[in-house]
Every structure is written in C-alpha cells, then in structure tokens.
Length: 537
Image (cartoon, rainbow, N blue to C red; front, side, top):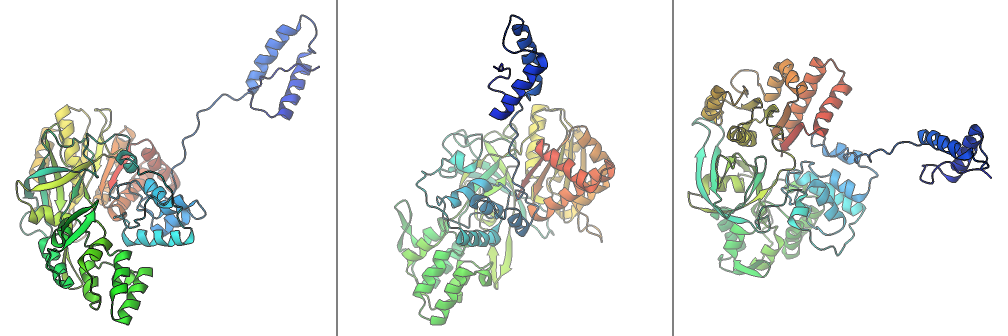
C-alpha cells in the first residue's frame, strides 16, 4: 500500500497525485509500516507543500481592447470581430462612458443585446456612425427579447455612488436660473456663458467631477414652423407618454426631439406620401440615411411635401427630448446650494437654415434669472480629486474643458489641500477667449495654482495647442508624473484628447528614454492606476 502524502486539495489530477505520492514515499523510504512512519510523513508533507503553488489572487478581467475613445469606429469593430453580440455592440459606442444615453457603453450594449432597449440613437457622441453600426450588427445577429424588469437608475448609469435623494434622470429637479454671464470678450468668434443655477436645500447634491444633466426645451420659432408645415393650429391634443396629453405646440417645445430623424418618422412619411417617388426614396432612407445626415425633422418634412401627417401619429413617431450633460464648474464647498456650468453657445448654418444647439441656446438666449430648468446630477465615473490632498495635479482643459478644473481648484482651496496644481488652458485668442482670466490670475498669484500654461491658437501665424505646450514643458511634466502627479484631461475626445495622449507618450518616450511601445505601456499603466483620468465627449 502506498501512503497518501499529498492533501486532497493539492492542485493535481488523480494520475499526477498517484505518481507524486509514490515518488515521495519511495524518496522518504516509507511504506506505511512501523512507528517511524509519523516523522517521515511530517517531513513528506512539508516537502509536498513546496510542490503546491501558493494561492494567488484572481486577476482582474482585462479591459475590452476596443474601449478606447482614441480609436476609430472601424478599428474598434475590428478588435471585437468574432466576439459575442454585446461586445460587438459595445465596440460601436463612442467609448466615453459619458452617461448621456443613460447608460455606460457596456450596459447600453447589453440592454440592446437582450432586447430591453430598442433605441439605437442614444449614443450622442457616436452619432450616426454608431447608430448605423448598431443597426447593421443587429441585422447580422438580432437581439433576443427578454422580460428583464427595467434597471434602476443607479444600475443603468453604471455608477457605484447612488444618486442623492429621489432626484434622477427619470425624476429631474426643477431648479432656478440665477444668472448667465458672457465669458468671451466682444470681438470673439465664440460665445461662452458662465451659468449659475440655484439648487436650494432640497435639490440634488454633487461632488466636484460630476456632471449636471439639463433637460432643454426647443425654441418657440422652430415649434411654430413645424406646426405650420403640418397645417395645424398647435392646440391639437397629443399624447407624450405615460398617458399625459398636451397641446401639439407644447409637445414640440418641451417633449419631442426635433433634431433626430427616427426610423419610425421616415416610415410614417413613406406610408402617407402621395407621391410614389417620394415614398420610395423615404423607404430607401430607412435602410441608408446618409443622404439626410445632419438634417432635422423640419428639413425632412420640407423635402417630402406630399406626406401630410396628423399631429398625433407625428408626435408618436418622434424621439423624446434627451438631457444634455455639462461638466460642473463649481465646488459645493464654495457655492453651497448652487451649481455652475461653463457652456458654449452652438449655432451654425445647414441646408440654408440657421440651426441651434437646443440646450446651449436655451441657456444663452432663452432663460432669464428666475427661469425654471429641470436638472439632475450625473455622478462621475472616477473623474475626481486624488484621495491624497498632497498629491500634485496636472489639468489639461482647453475651451469649456476648463469647467471641472475650476471646480477642482475651488475645492482644493476650500479644503486647504497642499498638492501642487498645474493647468494647461487653450482657446483661440487671448484677448477675447481667456475664460476666467482674472480668477485664474488670482489663484496663480496666491500660489494655489502652481503653474499656468496657455495656448491661444490664433495669436500667432502657427497654430499652437495645449498638446504643443505639453511637449514644450515635457521635462518638468515628466518629473511631476514620476513624483506621483495625477493627470486630468477634459474636452473633445476625438481630436484634443487623442492629441494630448500622443503628446504625453512623446514626453515619456523622450524624457524617460523609452521606446514607443514602452512609453505607450507607461501611459497605459498611469490610466490603470487611476492617475490618468479623462472627462471627454
């Protein structure tokens, strides 16, 4: 008989265990007989223990390789080729986890894949590229309808910190506008507003790094034009959801998204068009809407005049208005009961018509002090101050990307944090576009802001951007990073944030004396350690 020396929990199969038991028994000269067996068994057990690997922590799952906003959608889809449907759908998202859709990229994809979410146009940053890719992927592999109950707000948003009180995307708080103040000087090509909103003691609370969701309203002129094209009066009763019935004009102003051309809307037009050619073209647009990219509901109605819609089915075919998310530019420690935003007014020409950003022009043009606005707090997904108040911060935020860093600096001032603070800010012209100039100059003179680098692209013949300043100050920047500084980036994901990422890698490569692959890995490690954080859109 061979003594069983190895414990049953040893990580070997039966054949390996039998062989090792025999080997150890022979090596130790034991056969199960005699009083000398016990010490030998003890020695054998100790020897066997050296053969058993120590338990190791289960490795954290690797992040999806396509979850990178700097990659193009084609690159992301290629990386997910052959993966399960939720992964394929996720790779089509913008990868920002911005919360604008009410989900994170992964949870939005999972909701579409299991059939719980039918809307394919919620990814605002991804735009038509994302919605087209989602539609194509679902044709290749349809979603499976489930009976899963709707997720709670906290689950849908994918955040660990619950929303405060009962205020949420589904139940926004009615706040009051305190003021909207121009930040650009006369002569600027831009119009940026500093917006202050009163939350009071009953409204939602927030932390620096969070975003504020704002439910906008369409301008009266656009609603009136649509009413006229429909040949309606605006007083017709229409249902807007949950059994609520309001006049048509109110529905168009407060409830309907007038910038998004939905598939249901195109099909409704195709069904009611009396011109056969128009009906055929409309059905073709359902399959490929590239010819009307950038068009809104009014553009399409005017392009297909033979379609005449009744108010109720028209409203039912439109998407519902979605909130816009803005990075909060205030600290609750400095501005108790208030929240501040930094908002650029969006206006442009398309199809011979003036077009407006619905939320930005509402905040810039259509609200006065005392006006009501519906809001909720979208908690940040890791874009927050370092836990250690003595840690240094490098903040990179051109244009309205300065918003969260104004909040960070106010918070650090209020808490007496000792960490160094370095801000990179850029815009078009220093004379007109130096947002919060006096405030930042004051923080610099007091020493709270350790360094301030600016990049005004049109102040000289050669355009200079924040990424150029990063390279210029690379040696000092690399020193800060090596000493434990946290890096924060806020702004445009596809251009600015991608350019900043390349600049950081170049700095690490030159001043860290690394090759391209090692510098890329270095920056990736900063991100995995939560020392490189982004709030991009």
